[in-house]
Amino acid sequence: MLAFNFVSSPGAGKTSLLVRAVSELKQSHPVAVIEGDQQTSNDAERIRATGVPAIQINTGKGCHLDAAMVGEAYGRLPPLRGGLLFIENVGNLVCPAAFDLGEACKIVVFSTTEGEDKPLKYPDMFAASSLMLINKIDLAPVLDFDLAQTIEYARRVNPKIEVLTISAKTGEGFSAFYAWIRKQADRVKASAMGAVQG
Amino acid sequence: MHEMALCEGIVEIVEAEARKGAFSKVKTVWLEIGALSHVAPEALRFCFEAVTAHTIARGAALEIIEQKGTAWCLGCSGSVEISRRYDACPECGSHQLQVTGGEDMRVKELEVE
Image (cartoon, rainbow over the protein chains, first blue to last red):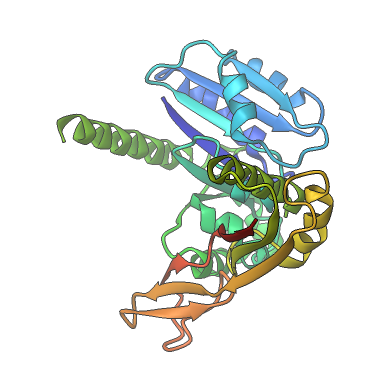
C-alpha cells in the first residue's frame, strides 16, 4: 500500500483534486481516503459519493493530523493491499509539515489564487514536500499568475521539489499526476525488492 | 509551534531517564534547538515551567543551546551556515542547498541528584 499526505492552505482544492483522482484511479487500483478537518464530514461524503471508501477524522481543537489518528482510521478501512491511500490533511500550511503520518511522501497543493510567494512565507511545508501540485491552473490567465516565479520560490526552499500544474475542475494535468504516482509505486516496489534480496 | 506538547515530550524523556538512572531530582535540562526546527525557544521557555510543575523536573532550570542551520552547497561543494529555509548560499548566492543540520530538537544533558 502506498500512502500520500496531501497538505495545503484551506481552499487550495485538495478535496476536488481527490474526488477527480479517486474516481479515475479506482478503475485500476484499490483506493481509499482519510480526510482530516477540524469539523464536519463534508469531505468524506464527497469522496464516498464516488464509491471510494473514506474515513473522516475531526481534529476538534487540533490543527493537524497525527500518526495515531491516521492509524486508528486506517484500521476502519477495508484492506488496501497493493493499493493507494490518500490522506487529506487539515488545511494549514504550518504544523502539518512537522508530523509524519506514515506516508511515502507529502504532496503540497498550491493554487494559483494564493500568491506566488507562499513557498517563502511558509517554507517548512514546501521543504517537507516531494511534489508541488499547482491547482486551478485554468484560472491563471485571469489572475496574472506568475508560474515561473512560484516555481523559483519553491525551489529556493527545496531545490528537489517536483512540480506539476493541474486543474481539478477541467482535469488538465491529471495524466501527468497519475504517471508521477505510478513512478512512486515502482520506486517503492524496487526498494522493497532490494530489501528482500539484500 | 506546539511547544506545550513538546515540553510534555521532554518530561517523558526525563522520567524515562530517571527510571533508568534512579535519580529523583532534576536541576537542569540542556536542550539543543536547531534554527531550522519547528520549535520557538521563547514559547518553549514559557511552557516549560507550567508543564514540569507536578513532575520530577519541577523547578529545573532550562538551558537552551541554539544550533545554527547548516547546508551543503552544490555550487561550492562545501558546508555553509543558513538561518532560514529560503536563504541563499552566503558564498555563491545559489539556492541549490541541501540542509544537513539544525533541524532537530534534542535533550542533550541533564543535571540530576
